[in-house]
Amino acid sequence: MNFIRAVIFALCFVVTALTFGPLILLARPFPLYKRYKFAVLWPRFLIYLAKVILGIRYEVIGKENIPTDRQVIYLVKHQSAYETLFMPWFTPYPVVFVYKKVLEYIPLFGWALASIDNIAIDRGKSSEALRQVLRIGSKRIAQGRSPVLFPEGTRTPVGHKGRYKPGGVRLSMHTQTDIIPVAHNAGKLWPKNSFVKKPGTVTISFGPAIKPGERSSDEINAEVEHWIESEMIRLNPEDYQSSDPADTPSYSVKNKG
Image (tube, rainbow, N blue to C red):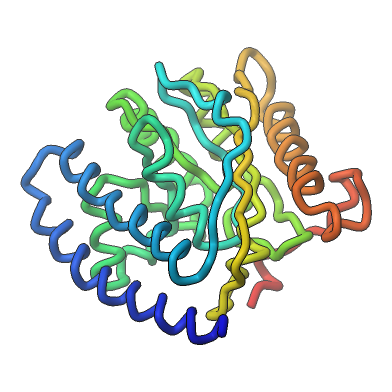
């Protein structure tokens, strides 16, 4: 049954991509805020289809931690595609994603990403990528957008963690913008590289704001990692052998696949 649901959802995904993709590109001459409002209709519709077809619902913890009067930087646990669909339409300010540039070469999907002024980086050139994040990210924040970064850099399997990269923290320090850490268990229902999804409820947890202050990037990065990984253990205790985030197995990009 789950396979049949996955087939139906995949077909709907393709049909909606073929519909929304060209329309988003045609909206390019319009102001950014109008393009964005139209573009986020697609991920919102996909979240709705995930509920109706796949039986995947969501619940939110810590909504009160999301400021409605200013932009923030969201540092999000990355396990599946679900969180990338959820974040753009749920947050009060338009978001700007930081993603690997090769995604822009995907027909329609990649072109649509580029059309709403996200931040594309070359992960193979880490120093240049960081400069891009700081330079363009600062501009986007000044324009009223909230950056979304996945500090692990890639999707990690349930029960594992990747190395937390400092790009989002550096941007926070550079702009003195608060960080909102985000944990979730989407990977249990929408596993990495899995065609078949499982019905259930995704819990998305927004943590208290982490202020950059005068601390070092290592200190702030450690606080972000500790909150996210501790919350992951709280959300999915059955997937972890220890209640200490330091004991969570590491996942290397070199080992992915």
